Image (cartoon, rainbow, N blue to C red; front, side):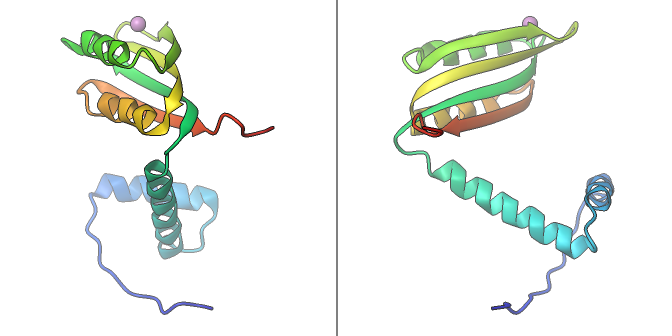
Length: 140
Ligand code: NI
C-alpha cells in the first residue's frame, strides 16, 4: 500500500548537493527526491543494523589515518591493547608519506566489536573507518 508522501525542506551545503546529484545521475535515479528517499532508507537500515550486534560476531575494522598526527598512533595502539581479547590480528600498510591503512580482525561479543570501531571513529586524524561484521556461522 502506498503511503502518503510528506514534503520536507532541507538546507544543504552546495558541495554536498553537487556530489549527491552526481551520484544519483550516475546511478540513474529519475529525481533527486527518489535518490534522497533511497539514501534515507539505507541510513535507517545501517543504523538499525549497527544497533543489532548482540552475540558473537566476527568482523573487520578498516581504517585510514594520518600517522603524523600527534598521539594518534599511540591512541590506536592503546585501544587495540584494551581489547586484545577479541582482536585476532591486524594488517598495516604504509600508503604514502603520511597515511596508513590498517585492517583489524576481531572475534568476540558484537557490542564490544562495535565499541572498538566507535572509539576509533572518535579519534582526530582518522580519515576513514569501516566496520564489517558477520555471524560466525554465516555461510554454513
Ligand atoms: Ni604506516
